[in-house]
Length: 335
Image 1 (cartoon, one colour):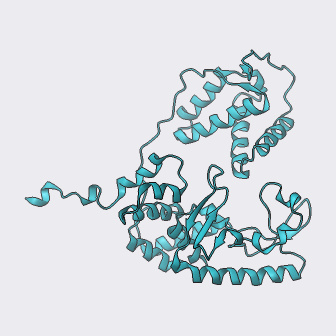
Image 2 (cartoon, one colour):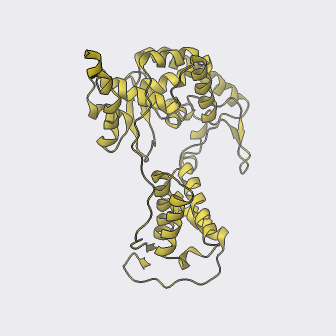
Image 3 (cartoon, rainbow, N blue to C red):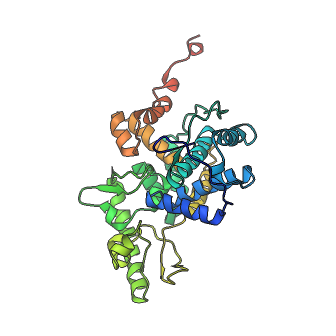
C-alpha cells in the first residue's frame, strides 16, 4: 500500500490492540461528522473484516486480502451490491483516515449484482385507506411522510425550529448524505401540526418544572451553547413518551419517538387494509414522488424536494407513473 504522498508503507508488525484501533476509527469518523448510524455500521464492517482475517492487524493486510473479503461477501454471503460497496467504503476509510495510506488496485473483485428494481407505489386510494386505518397518535407522522416525501428518520428527527408556518416550509436538517433541504408544509397539515406542537409544549413545560426538558443536540452544540438543550426551539416535534437518562452525565430528558413504533403502525394498518403490496414507511415517499410527477410537477423540482443528488435517481419514478406501461393499451384488448 501507499501513503498519501505515493510512497510505499512498511507494515507495522506490532501486535494489534483491537480496542485502541476501534477507538481511533471512531474518532476519525466523528471528526468528519459522520452520523452515529454510519459510525456504528462502518465499525461493524471493520470488525467483520478483522475476524475474517483471524484478527491480523489490518495494516499488515493489503489489496489481495481486501479483495478476498469483498469477494467472500458476494459469493458466500450473497450480499447486495450496495452492502458490498458499504463494506468497501468502511475499509477504505480505515486505511485512508486512520493509517494515512491509499488502497491501490484491488484487482478483479467478484461484484455482487445490482438488481434493477422499481419502487413499490400505492395509488392515492390505497394511501388514503392506510392513513384512515392507522392509529390516531401516529397519523400525523404518516401524513408528513406522504405529504412531504420525508424519509422516516428525517420526519421523527424534526425539531420545533424546523417548522415555518408563515412560509409554509419545513426544513430537513442533516438528511441522507449530510444534506439540508426545504420541503413544502401541506396546508391540510398546518392545523394538526400546530395542535401537535401545543401538546409537545405542554409536556416540555411540565418537564422543565421537574428539572428535565433536555434534548440531545447535534455534534458539539451542547458544549458551544450550554443552555440550548433546554430551549423550546430545539425540542422534538415527535418526542418519545418516556424520559431518557444519560449514563455519563445522569441528566434526564427526551429523545424523539423510536422509528420501530411507526414501522409497526404502518404494518398493522396495511394488514387491516388487506393490501398485497409490500408497503413500508418508505413507500409513502415513493408514492409522494410518483403522484407529483403524475400531477405534472417538473422532475427537477421533485429531485430537489426528495434531496436526490443525481437526477437519475429521481427518474426511476417515471417507470411507475400511470401513463407508463399501465397507460398503454394492449393489442389483445382490441381483438
